[in-house]
Length: 308
Image (cartoon, rainbow, N blue to C red; front, side):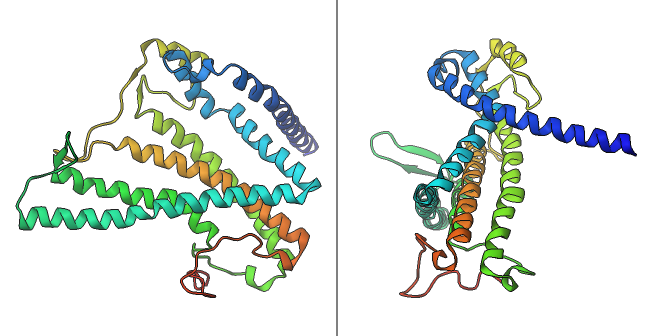
């Protein structure tokens, strides 16, 4: 029993040392990447593409991102104004992207109306759009493309909805505790649930996306040396096969949207943590500080009933 306990403590100590070492190396890795951009951004070189693929889902990239936000939080502990500025920028990014992407819902409705008219009224098998060089596809292509608009709304409006307080919550404890206790729950939740979930999903979705863009297919288990060997046979193989004859042929865009969505979740997990900490520190009078919420009418918020 004592040996098991000692080995557990030793493993925990090794894990802590590993984390500290990677945080320290993050500064070097970031500096090296910035000073040698050709090694991973010069996509005329096949090895550079494989380096980009590898490091996008690597431990090194995670710790560069993690250390950046950790340093930002450290500065914010000294100057709260800096942290409030970071919160405003990150929440502003989520709001701006979400408000713009929400228009895809209207576009989806209008395109569906056009499809119905072209099929039922004009009995056309295709739709041609454009000036000079028209964009002409079968109606089934445009019908399947409606899924893309739906995906845009879901993926790009997710963090926007979170900022706006629009996600449904099942509350068992939260409403009964004090203001500061709520902020502690928010901080713990963002670090123990939201952030790890985003990291795990990023690892899978990153390589899932690239397997639909290039061959040979990269894998999350591949080391850099193996990917560099694969680069000798690398070629672009962007997914352009529809699920039906004459159907939508750009399903690779869905994979890209998934990666973008998860990146935004990661960023906003930190924004939520920063806001929760600042509101915990400054007290109840800081609740909702710098919030940019959408309203239906003066004094009425659109998501008053999102929590039950």
